[in-house]
Image 1 (tube, rainbow, N blue to C red):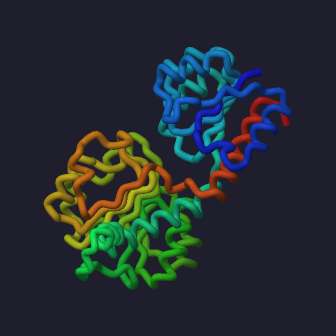
Image 2 (cartoon, rainbow, N blue to C red; image 1 turned 90 degrees about the vertical axis):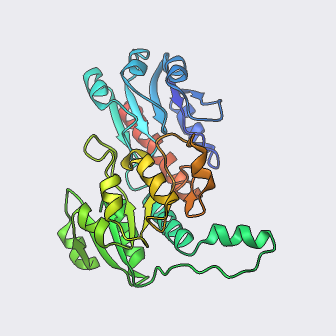
Length: 308
């Protein structure tokens, strides 16, 4: 029985994951391209497979149609926007995800981006390497207002960290956890209010038809000139053309983006901004998170293939 493993970090530091798969009688086909697989590459590699450990590579209806034996998909992460769930359900393909495995890692990175943008850390570092020791004035994080859009596992981890900076926290989630909000001192607010009042806005929602373009030109216009926007979730949550214009014109203070609709972004204007800190979709890429995601993905796949 063959399976395809697409995430490049899977088993990189814990090769025993491959031993577990082999011991279960599975033959592993690896992603040997060095990048995210295209739909065409997915169709070719997935064709003989019964199982799939999937990163951010596309799994649409056409890819699924090329894999008639596929029975289980173990998402290496939590976002399911690259998977045609309706097509999987129609085919009886089981889909799992590694909920909670990377929550702390992503929350750490979100805070790192807030600090890096607010304190202009990359700019200061670059100037220092050019032997420019001039002082650069930045803005504070401590005591400011943080708006969290998406108070799920990762959003809650961000809130816990923000309390250490004595931040006022506003949050929005369609499924509201009143007990946690009360314990953490979080005030419920809709996205418009968050955009108007927050000094820092951090996005932690899944990408759906409803959340696509959540941060658009209208909401960017609501933000303070000193606002910082952070996205470690999915690129499609933001109207990137509108954000690029706002950053270039200095209408908000800055942004920290670990995700883009196209990765890497094609427009060269992104790379010229001093008020942007960019990431390569790496917020969950810590040794601990990668190890935990790998273990959970293997557990989920073996369970769904009835091999546990």
